[in-house]
Length: 335
Image 1 (cartoon, rainbow, N blue to C red):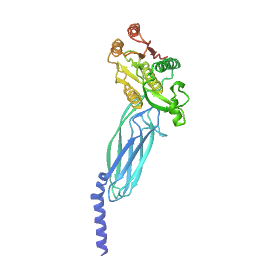
Image 2 (cartoon, rainbow, N blue to C red):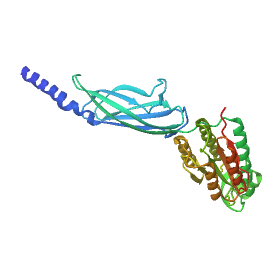
Image 3 (cartoon, one colour):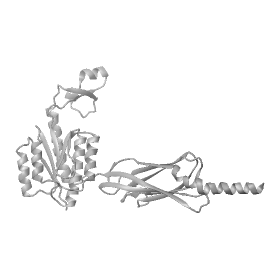
Image 4 (cartoon, helix red, strand yellow):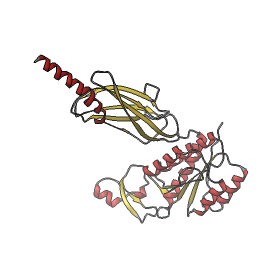
């Protein structure tokens, strides 16, 4: 009787060792996600994963190794790889998160995971691997050049004043609570009386100022072009902060964008700036011709470029003849 029990036990172990255990990895599901696809340089990004055991038996040993995109630095580890071990009961799951940073502008792809499980007797291991389909874009840094910031701030401030002057007070599209920053003429006194609080009219801009951000990548060093991207980011963010819709044009590998406003519009431009390889497809003169072709009434241009040559300035003078307002020219000088 004891012999039969021992034989049955040995057969069970051999069945688990050679039949069941090799199939364990096929019943493990690994999923992951990043908390963002667009990040600041050095911003903390969270990677979350979930390992699920769909098997009817527990998995006593699982070793999971992660290799994030090259250049990533996992918090407090200063490297792009990590590993941990767990065990999973049947029909159960385990979650794991880690934070990492990406140091500079660019698009980060790639990465892999390696999942190892062992056999019942510890003689053999089974490895399952897969790609981590990362596609994270790091946008340019903010411009910190004080002269550029002062020039840009003054120009956008002038645009805001022009919008205020030319808005059509007959087309009211809504109402907002009074914050103290709006002019008194915007207050709707009848509606304020009914609501027992001050509310202001939200006007439609029927004769609006047209703002076009123009990025020139046809000349300059790599450092100067990088600074151009930083200025472009800052210009778009300042226009957003003033609630001014804007169009984007470039002669480089950054997609053009129709006039728009809001988070989606800004993020699309920031993604394109982050992915740029600083390649130019046409000259500055050709870019100016396109600006003239696409011009609108009350057009304001923010021209961003590496230091302009004499021929570039001649092209810029050509644009001046078609503009209602003198363009704001921001040259990315690098010491």
